[in-house]
Length: 254
Image 1 (cartoon, rainbow, N blue to C red):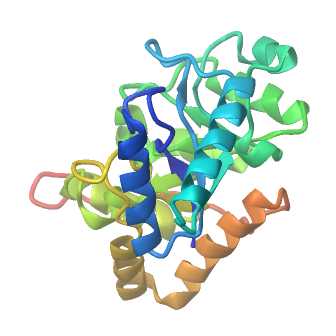
Image 2: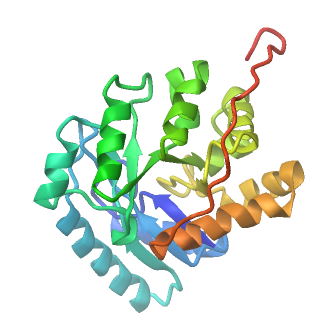
């Protein structure tokens, strides 16, 4: 199994704080059945700055450490970049790191809204030959209230990644239900952990797969697993026609 979103690099953000933390996360990842994991430290989210070259060097160091510890996990370089106006300029400067140096680029939206310039920036990213992947849209308040905002972006070439913990109910029933709706509507293309530690924000990949199998069957599981494999190889991923989410009230809750 491949996990394309994690905070396993030690001492760079709100994920693993120490080398010991990173080793603990790596061991748990292996127990979950993960063989390859992309380290995606936060970048430009107001508190953390993790530029391309530094991440690549730190990933290399961590891989050597895991090899010495005989932990069968390969760490690949990536970055979780918060959307900001100068992103394209910093891409040109070499500060922005696509996932495993492919043509797929993680984009994080603020948790409360979708900035007005989002559609234009994601279009410009695609003009540079990159495919933007919005991380955890199911946890964005504006997307929750107006899923058509996400539908519009996906129709115009943006991909999305839902968190395993959202599928298992870790972030609450409302987000869990919305995650299922995103899957049903072909509005998401990847499931990954966004793991920060081994306790409060763990992997939950195996558990999420069980939920997906029960709700949608094996084909959906294979779809997400295949897409993760294609992504790290820099190949075109499967992308089915998205549809509008039908919103229904249940006990006063959407």
